[in-house]
Image (cartoon, rainbow, N blue to C red):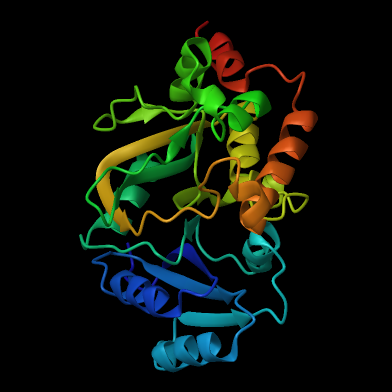
Length: 283
């Protein structure tokens, strides 16, 4: 394969983490690959200093382009700004805090996608700054379980079991495996699938667009795969973290509840698409 042939479009959306973004992009530029790639940094911080730090840090990098929003348009819309400008066969969505310590991450994930054409979305293992494996895998959500997670209800025996399942605490994070959905903090998406669904669903402002994209993948006959053969590193800070009281303190938690309610109402009577996929492909 030609070294300069672009195989991958990378999106890093920044919200007030400019210096971590520069470390992220520096790691990406040091990846050892046999293909080319284009990096888009999309800034939603609405902060002149954040923009200055990023633009100064990447000004000498011809394959890095900075796109600046004058207002925070939300997670889905900011990522969809690359629609019509995607280069290569894959879209790689990367949160600003992600760090690549190994230099073969891009090469390995692209090679695995090339070898497995039925995968639409793939995510590597994530290690938090604390050294713990991040819970980047989730079960398809149920609103009452998501509410219970934030209250004392999560400690009730029957509900506790359901909460733990929703959080995938039982998962063997050392194995390559199909999963319901992956948090989009670091995922590679097949371009033709991305374009079929139009990117992220913009009716979700900040959360659940990644959930719905994975659900659409299963519905359309693709797989969603957790791939721990490669690792990335993250700060482990989640905007939606916190219990019931945080609903009154954090606009991010309130947005998470709003987006979750929208998703659950939309898919209230939808059958499990992963089960339907297996039923269809078991014959």
